[in-house]
Amino acid sequence: MHITVFGATEQVGKRVVQQALNRGYTVTAFGRNVDSLIDADNRNEKLIAQKGYVFDAKDVFNALNGADAVVSVLGGAFDGADKSRSLGIKNIITQMEAKGIKRLIALGELGILNENEETLLIDSENYPEEYKPLGMEHLKAFEFLQASSLDWTFYCPSNIIDADETGLFITSINIAPEPNSFKINAGDLALSMLNAIEKKEFIREKIGIAGL
Image 1 (cartoon, rainbow, N blue to C red):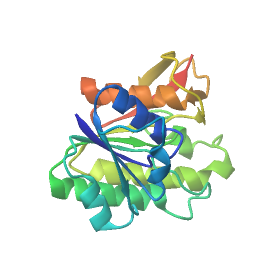
Image 2: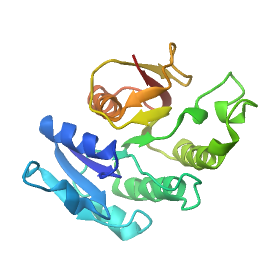
Image 3: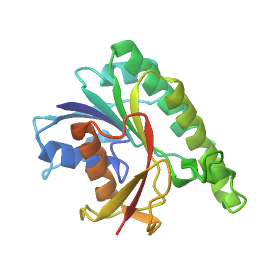
């Protein structure tokens, strides 16, 4: 298995990279500061660190060389002003379709899950106003996924904790998990993402996830 990870130096991305290497995958880690991933404790012939800019079509296209699947855990500004999540995923989708790569795991947030059959949580009157700019970025990313030909999965967690995997978490399809702790370890989120690739789970579905 060869995966390309966008956002590889973020708190989820670096754990996706390490866990994938532990599984024996070849990993192309993409980002502007990926040299930080290669140190004395993480030298691995299966790790390809590729510098690039997610808005650059050629950079993204080249990062997909040899990939069987893609994980996008892009970060960005809290106010969404940099458009990294929406326009970044749009470029990734475009280049994946050009390459003929189908499988994409992408990171969203809780507000994109369904409140009911007709309404998303972001549209609820109880959704915090301060989260709406970020939520709208994730909503736009989700719309790009829906319009694509890819086999995508869109993970929609609440608060991501900078901690390693425990294996103690639950997932749900399209709605928030119950019970919902409103937090998930970055390591557990990475674990679930890689499991979804291996098991071919959650194709073209939004996924809620929470720690136990």
